[in-house]
Length: 86
Image (cartoon, rainbow, N blue to C red; front, side, top):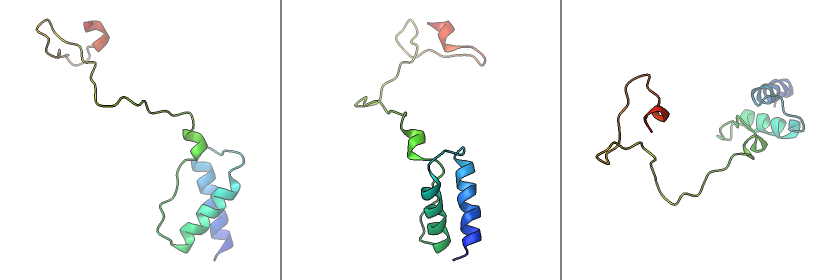
């Protein structure tokens, strides 16, 4: 393996993720895997970056479309804000 190539790639990953502290080992290992060609796609953000992201458990699809007087979804003209039609 080319150590210099791995070092440069690990730095690219680190910079692409916004230079997070404490992730150097993961970046290095990811760069090694990429060079080894194991087929894994490169990770572009860290799990810590997504830790504050929550996906609500809605149990289905819902819509909060603004309805007209007839109960049908309303329509908006370009440039018109939905909040103005409530």
